[in-house]
Image: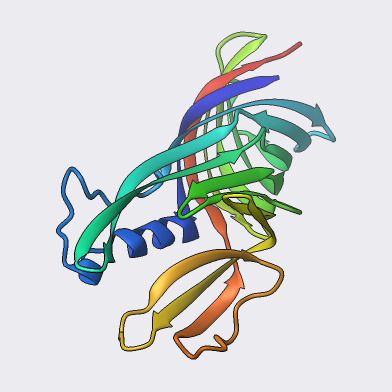
Length: 250
């Protein structure tokens, strides 16, 4: 059994772009300050996991790892125009990855009695949810949240039962297909969380936008909005981790 932890970094993606667009000073020419912060869910996180391994031979082993939840949250004040006045809405964003589970295949090479090098990779499952508020509350959960990862490291034997482990890895995990609901007062909208860019009639600015709907927006019947780049919203966990820990022989 191996217990290891360290520092990780993820791209996050669409929800950060969404909030940046809504707090951008180019819309109402309001500078970013303590009362008007552009929110960004922090891309850094603590990467901690417990892994059990089963030897398949002299050089190969199979590992099953379970990580701790990854939680990111932020809030911001969005200023918007209402007639001749500028008003504000507090927006809160939160994303959670619940108990990521990863299956690994390792190749090991013993370079000395105390030092073992290894490389490996595999498939990860990252069940995730996102919530945010903007003229209503949006709550969504991911479906089929799969990702890939690869990396390597070194294991240093401290004695017959305990080893020091140092490793690093890269992940390709773009979690998509979020489904859920948006609640505005007593009205509930259900569907898929879509990302797209929208431009309003008379403006040359394209906003990053997120919306709950059965289908991605294509055309405004009133001709006041124009859409492009429609796709399912992504929580991008792609990035890298650096960890250290201890391996126990049971």
